[in-house]
Image (spheres, one colour):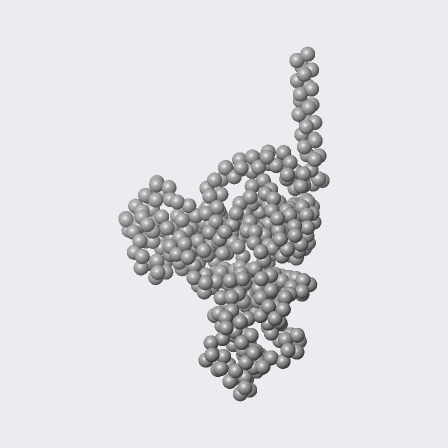
Length: 400
């Protein structure tokens, strides 16, 4: 009798497992809305937490640097609502599942995998509902809602209204003096996100479009429009008079626009909307995290706009490696002038290069080496070739 009961229990458990996996769809049972909202979500979340616990050091490091630029961490498919044109930014290892509405995925490098089909998807592809999209190594992806949508996120993400959308809306307001039309707005946004046009390109298109030309603005009105559009402020009388005088003396409006587009003030406006004016696409999230950490941990201050964007550009283009940037910060005059003790220097290296607080034995070993005559350059080189620094660069998509 006991043997019969045992067999029945085994069959019941096995049958229950089959039912659980059959409840999901086809090749990826973990991404259906039923699974995400149902009781199986609890068991999945426990499994994920157990896996993360196996590497708490790396998880803590990523938490630390991600929080500096406003990233959240969702475990076990957290439900998110996306407003029209809003964006969810994902970093490597994160995934998104669209459950309602419509959205596209955009990325400038790396790859995004449709886990449900096993296929890579192209940048700009429309998401298929109830299929899970995974952000692969060295990839920063933006999920852009083309209607009010809901979805499920697993991993690190930043949920925000589209900065690029706000940038284009501002051009409609300041240049054309009207509200946007939906089709035109989305077309300009898509062009910037895909990298086809830069912020400067789109501004030029508005300033010299037929609609504005037909308004027959006077030179004074044209200059005042440029101030509000390109500099984000009203013209000061002396500046306005100077530019109007140049136009009245034969300078072209194209020349004047070019003077404004290369200004530091327009650059700051582009940065405030997440754009690099000469490149157009948002700065990769991993690059933001990496550079921000150099400022906060090495220099003990927040990044300045011009300096941080310069470093981000270099890293984004591949011209500057992560180790090169770190070396420049660690041995810059600003840090040298802080006159850090050997202990403080080692603690700074741990936070900067490894993303964590020094363990006592390790700190004492490095400080002892410095006190015995080792150079700070030598200690830095030891940190820069470490597996931990290499892993941080890999996770953030930065060339080591």
